[in-house]
Length: 361
Ligand code: SF4
Image (cartoon, rainbow, N blue to C red; front, side, top):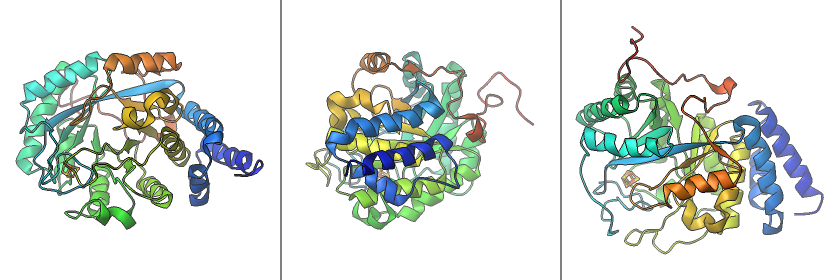
């Protein structure tokens, strides 16, 4: 990039990020140009993303905690996933955790500082019986931690299931797009990109806060990365997790190591510029790919997963907390709204099922 082009690019994406005006968004060309910057420009790019991040989220970091309700033995074939059909990855395999066991796991995350608990189950999507089971689990989690935000991630949703989850006390639903529409068939053959888009729409239609993100490092081009981040913008989620591929042995993508820490940071910065006032979450694979540059990622992302992932171990929760403090950030408290005021159209429920407060009926 020329000496004049970089300041111009960063000045434009920062100005747009600080305004967060949907009528004047960061363009595809600008997002591609951010990914095309050189390693020598990395600190300028990260600092620019940091200005946008601070405008909307201050120095707060939201902590999220994963609870894998059902692990492995999935009939789907997502190439990146250690739980996929035929996976030979040596991961834990178990069927549904009891509500009590899930509540115990969630309580550990909340005690560590997590504001949101993400209840995840492997599989194509839940049966209605599964939804009832998750509803009981949500009740058990809330009984022990009335303040916690609850997100469910159960795969493709059928008609009416998002509404049932909402009535059970679920605040948010996660379903990632993962990669661009054009390359989706290269990472999965058992369902389609459109199925994923439909589920995000169902969650939003039921009033749940939508969480949907991507996985980088699966062999995609910069164009694919920008496309999926723009496709996500069109869905208007409240949270965008950015995962970096963990290439498990025994999966089709084993041995795929395409990212450098610098590239991972550019991807996070680009995601922040495209989603200036949305929760950008540093997700799976951060330790593997960012390595010693992890703290810099907090300049772009305002949210991370605490502790372990679904089938792999993360760094110690204590190390996460130390990293946040050392980098000059603070853990977001339960009483603080994550989203900037103008985006609080989804009001997280604090009454009715799972609380001591009268329902809205
Ligand atoms: S549907 Fe979910 S659990 Fe199943 S293979 Fe795909 S990502 Fe893994």
